[in-house]
Length: 151
Image (cartoon, rainbow, N blue to C red):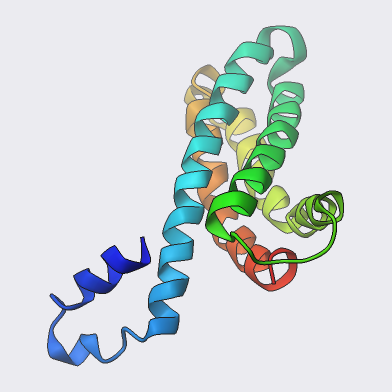
């Protein structure tokens, strides 16, 4: 991923190319990987909400889906996005991931809850709420993952 982004920087105008440092390219590559992991999580999140909304309601399904997806995203980020980074036992890292991502959780599920409560189309089609929630929490979660979980 990093090599591809680095190649693409050669097509930037000269004035912008100087800002494409190796560190920034590496961070962008991590962010793109983080985004792909998040996108796969969004699919699982949405499928879980749709599967459980009849038996658990939209709020219960949303909560269960978040725990499942956050755990899956931690695993995928551990083995792909932040490979070789971080230390300590995996269960401690998972705990740090879950704890530090509470801010992202608040943004993610807060957005979800607001939309399914106040926007009728989001209650009928929860994919709208899960997508908006994922975007709301993504930047905070990436920053915390880089600085706290996978440092």
